[in-house]
Length: 178
Image (cartoon, rainbow, N blue to C red; front, side, top):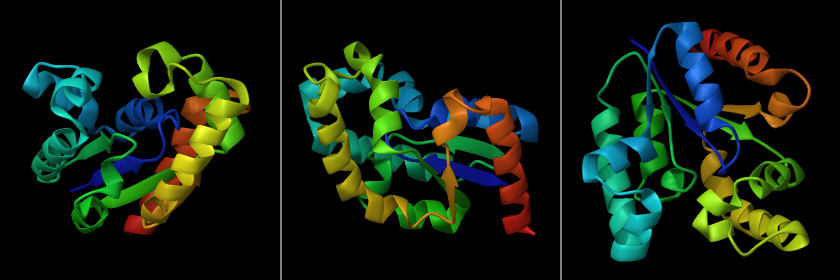
């Protein structure tokens, strides 16, 4: 039985790497944000706008408890999920947690292109975007660093690609779970 939780800041590659890793390891794949959107029939941004962050975080916690019971799965979490309601403890107890570490500069470059689909970033660019990422990453890092594996995902789009990173991560996971 295997349960892998990918955590990290938005743009870290949790979805991209999660899909490749699940295919390589012959595991199911779940993205908690998509799971919430399908369950509640609303986009995450819409839930934030109409029901507020506290309601969204409650939904996340319920979904996390549910997917923590599923076996043989790779779970990509929302960037903030590990920081609320003891969610890191839930994930660490249920399986292997992997923090995808990405530098502020690389995150800013990745997120610059997706600002329109990420409401919190819409009016930020350049130094302002990097400063926003740095500040929020500094608040989240203590939660992220509770992961069983800290994995450098910086080179995913530049040096070696998702497939090669997934291969490295797969070896780390197998070595840790032996």
